[in-house]
Image (cartoon, rainbow, N blue to C red):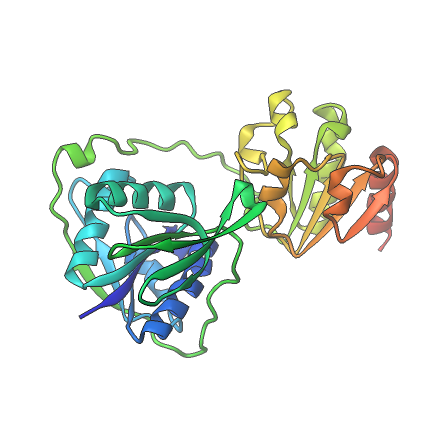
Length: 324
């Protein structure tokens, strides 16, 4: 028996978008090898999340349960994932390139003394497996050989389209698994969470994101971006310099050390466009930049650009939206 094993992240019983992106690569790999794709889910809501995987051609969903595994524990997740990979004869273990996915696969690589390829966008199996992956914050594409078995791969976030759902397709069969864990496996784990309540759309799920940078000028200046985002049914994000200045919290930061977004439209206001910020927003389908500097790198990265003072342009856009 052999299979491709994929780690699916979920929240509140819903598979994350990045996991669906990862499953597009896992599914393609399974088809090329002629073997099934199995998924592994942890945490509360895992059962419900399986229904969200219907129609993706997945064979089995392994639900990991353990009396002491009621929250995220990276080493324990790696142990459970490794047990399942061994039991089904995995030729590859694939995970989304998120903080969690990368951490878990790194632990699995350490436990098995296997190499791991991170931020992969394509895999070509053969006598030797070739992987294409992003390097240097996505500014460089590297082709490399990945040896060992199973191959351990994380998929670059927002580099691929989510897996296509076949209407009316079945959900994968559920199998419950209780891994063998030691105290050392559970030494590092989440012991509690404090969530900020908000009635606004999530930054990572918003179809429209309005970003603000140094050009906003102050924390108070973000009021107009909040208004614009509300009118468009979107969310507000910021560049690193804004969080460094204390104008907005790090949770709103878009970039290499912040969130990676993939909205239909990203409106970058007063953002110069450093490569670290581009890493976070390049998944957007369209980018509109508003900047008074015609030579700002952000304009070169954008589909549309307005060269002008954002303190005049944004209020004008808001007025026009209110009129319509």
